Image 1 (cartoon, rainbow, N blue to C red):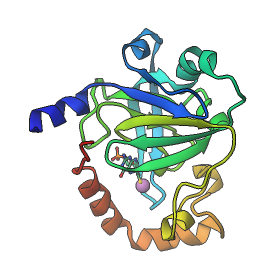
Image 2 (image 1 turned 90 degrees about the vertical axis):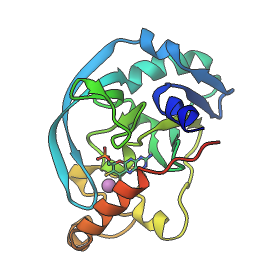
Image 3 (image 1 turned 180 degrees about the vertical axis):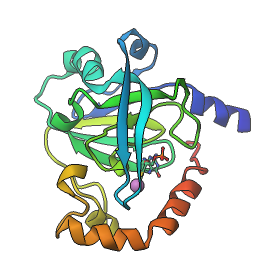
Image 4 (image 1 turned 45 degrees about the horizontal axis):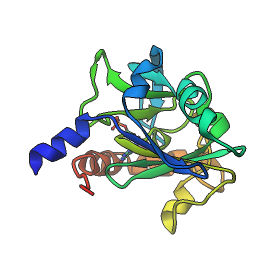
Length: 201
Ligand SMILES: Nc1nc2c(c(=O)[nH]1)N[C@H]1C(S)=C(S)[C@@H](COP(=O)(O)O)O[C@H]1N2
Ligand SMILES: [Mo]
């Protein structure tokens, strides 16, 4: 059971779905050009990590080569789902930016479980919560979707661009900079804990 679990975290298998007929991408991903990138990472709770060296595949290459030929309708919105039950979303146009990766390496080694094995999104212009780890499903939709409920909805900006301080759904980001700062140690602990649990479906 544990071994099966572990294998799941190593094997790259992405299910593509939504308003497009479902299909699985695994080895096809390796046919895309490998891209290396140095970029900064900003968590909305105000910690940042600068100059991270990621390696993987451009989301745009993945979309243009493997998804677009199979889509029959114009798509504009993407829901990303992870093996630990976490999900996030972004407009397709944001994911098609040159600096958005499906990354499988950090500092030249395969991603650790903590940092999103086997493959994760890296979207440097957006707050960290859009950089989904352990990605397993990518759903493309014609129209925007609301994916979080309750308090989480408030904490979830559809774009969450770091330089525009889009920290929360409504209200001035600058105020939330200070509120989030007060919770920083707690949130780091929660996210560290969260990354230890996986659902085996
Ligand atoms: N699957 C999954 N992805 C996730 C999260 C998570 O809990 N589960 N946390 C998000 C948040 S809030 C941040 S800041 C980053 C943290 O990435 P790191 O653990 O590599 O530092 O991952 C994001 N992606
Ligand atoms: Mo975060």
